[in-house]
Length: 161
Image (cartoon, rainbow, N blue to C red; front, top):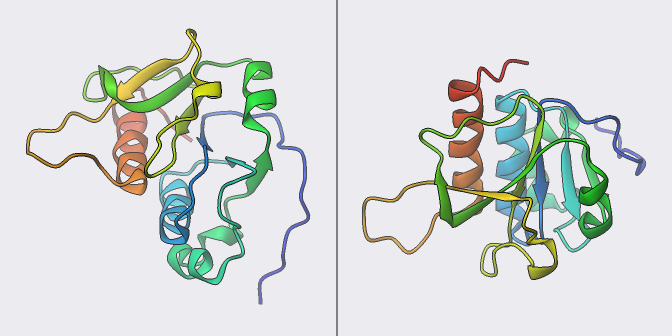
C-alpha cells in the first residue's frame, strides 16, 4: 500500500534536481520519476501544469519509484530565481552533453514534449545543454533526454550521491 504524500515546500536542494516544465504525458512523468530513482536524485520540481503524479498511468510507468522520489509542484517562474545553484536547461541548441561538466549541485530544467521550455523560464543566466543527435530524428522524448543527461551528470561531473 502506498500513501499519498501531502504537498510540501521542497527541502533544501542538493545534487542534481530535475525541474519539469509542463510535462503532460503520464508515461513521460512516470519514466522520469523512475530515472530520477535510478540515478539517485533526491527530488523533482514540477510546474503546476505538469501531469498529476497520482495519475494511474504515471504510477504504472514509475514502477514504484514514486514512493522514493518526491515530486514537488511549484510555480517554477517564482521558485527557480530563488535557487542558489546553477540552473541548466535541456534544449536542441546548447553545449554538448558529452563534455559538459555539471556543477555538483544544480537544477536541470526539462520542457514540455511539444513546446519545450516556456518562454517565461528562458533567462540569460540559464545555460542550455543539448544531447547531440547523429541521425535524422527531429527530437528526443523528454524522458529519454532526462536519462541521457542524468547519466552524463553522474559520469562526467563526478556526481555522486
